[in-house]
Image 1 (cartoon, rainbow over the protein chains, first blue to last red):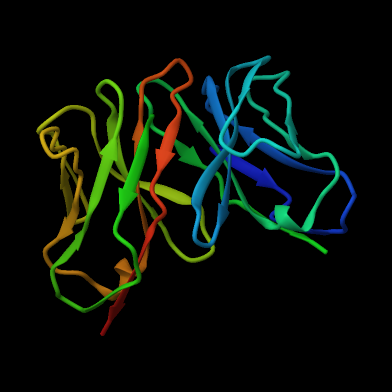
Image 2 (cartoon, each protein chain N blue to C red; image 1 turned 45 degrees about the horizontal axis):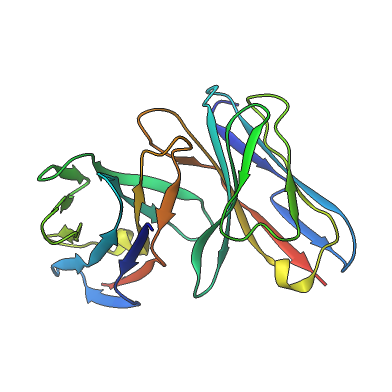
Length: 111
Length: 113
C-alpha cells in the first residue's frame, strides 16, 4: 500500500510490558516523527528522525525508544509500559519543503 | 522557542454560518504555517498551508492568510457544512534541520443542521 501505515491500529497491554508500534512509509521521505495525542494536550512530539540512523528526542521522550535502520521504517518502543502512556500515537513523515503526512494512528491502552 | 496557540473549543455553529478559528504563533525565523483537519477516528490531513508572509492558503472553501505583523494564521470559511465537523489543528514548521512541526492544541468544530 502506498502512503504511511501504522500497526497495530489498536493495542491493549499491561503495565510493565514492552510494546513496539510500527510505522512504514513508501515515499522515501527523509523525515519521520512520532506524536502522541491526548485530550487537552493536542499533539506532542516524542521522537523525530532526519534520516536513517539519525534520531533525536522531542518534547516527551521519557519511556520511549526509537530506531531507524531503514529510511522507510520508524518503530517506537515502550520499554516498560505505564498507564500514563495510554494514548493515541501518530507517525508522520515529511520531505522538503516541509509537508507532514500522517498515519492513521495506533490507539494504545495500558492496563 | 516555537509554539502555536489556537482558540479553545468546542465551536458550535449552524450550517451555513461563518467560521473563524484563531491561531497565533511564536517562532524564530520564517516558519511555514499549516492547518490540519482530523475527522473522527482518523489521522491528520493537511487542509492548507502558507510558506511566506502575506501568502493565502486555501482549500475546500477554507482560507487562511499568513500575517507576519500579527503572527497569526486564522482559519476562515464563509459557509460551513455538517461535513466540516472535525478537529482543526494549526501548526508551524521551523525549517530546522529536522523539519520539526509544532502543533496547537486543536479546536473541535461541531456544525449542526
